[in-house]
Image (tube, rainbow, N blue to C red):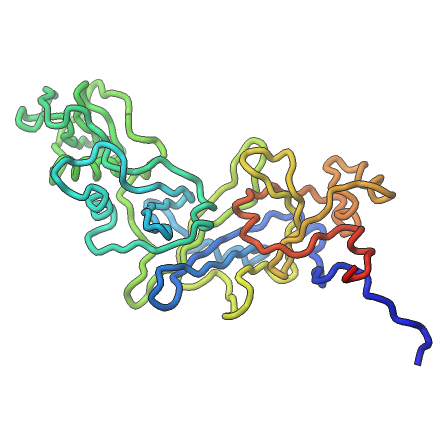
Length: 373
């Protein structure tokens, strides 16, 4: 037996056993936060987050990725309803002006118009909704003086009233308009769907293309065509796993690109009873967590295949700092000692970063300290 005394273990408790190499840590990843219905009779949702690299990021493309006019119909835990489009924008539903005044539940009428009589929304978490962009509230578009007479060339006098939806044909297909007090204004197919219902009108009035239409007044960020809901929760093959997907990171001149995915199961397998965060094995990402549009700085994190994010100190001192100071994007001595001196961290929105559970901070002081001290 050795006569040497054994001292306390030196290092950071619960630090990752392995780290991604510098090339991988610098490479943008695909992030996804996915909600699926919870078990039992509760309305809650189960959630998992994924950070995928290499070939695994292909799991979030293909036929399960939303395209065209495909949308999700969801509600938060307070039963506020949203439409989510393929670009990752959430639109609150109901409550806007211009609803029909026929003694009806106008929000209920709006939901039935968009999704059908029997549709039920999927319940999602607040953190899932926070990962999305915010769009303009959707409601029945307001038409001043609805029902008042407004002469329009080519429209029978009995139908020439404010609120009437018109349809013309051009070389690119059907074009839609609505009569307002000041004339004829163009609208999208999506807005026409709502205006037809608001006007108790079964079909648009056919006309030739107006000679001098008014400017468009429908919110420009609204969907364009008839919404096609894909996140079904019933039937033999439900698509009830709904994912918000982040591609890459932010820059000073651009917001992150979002898409939406809906499938029958999570994009990668997470075993029951394990952590709800998955990072591609052997992969990871060095990034800075940013709030709002400011990408000039933020807390530096290293995400690893433990499914955790570890804060990395930016403080510079010693010889490691001298090396870092020669790099344009100096990340600090801790990052240098981890092998990331030449890695420029991506900027990840805080709403996404905070989806990953935190591990212990990675800094040189803690690494040299006895555990438990």
